Image (cartoon, rainbow, N blue to C red; front, side, top):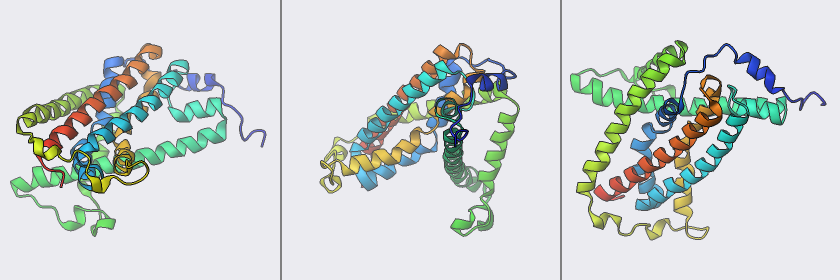
Length: 285
């Protein structure tokens, strides 16, 4: 039991990371964070949660989730500046609390990323199959379009995109940084275009009632907003990945902090704006 909570010296992680090259700056980290946080969720969650739990007040749910993410982000930033090592919360837990806590956190992170990657890959496959392949007359058999839980055998498009991204990551942070930056510019440009053009199609009647009475459940009548906030918090998964890149970041004491906080601020602006425009254009029902 004495060794159960044995703390790992931070030098152990620093030595393991010595082979890594520090070539990421604050801008690269923000792009990495936005790439992880602003994904399929922004096109699915606002409409789904507005219809099911909060109405147009889903924008408040995103704001609440962002506040919590911001506080967690500050904790990550503090740890990253004090211990600029790879491994994120796994490394922090092992150094501060001991090996067993680090082990539990490590498996928790693996489960988190399995969930996030599978959701993103499935979302990508849905868009790819319906909006890219279908219009040109290519229709995959049901067995290759859905997983076993959906009546198929394998979601081949989802598997392929995971393998492609894995191959890019295997080439090193330098290549993945360039690919990520290009993808983020395209993605954010599309979202901003939707927000700007969509503003001209907003109908004020769609905001009334802003928080429908049927969603005003206990506690304190914010049950719908809090339920949606708990669900959309999933959309902010990803900013913690920046801490895992501390060992490849120039001047991590400053840049990791800028990267995490910049990611949370930009993400909340895009999510809240997107939610307000979407529910203004189309009635939440």
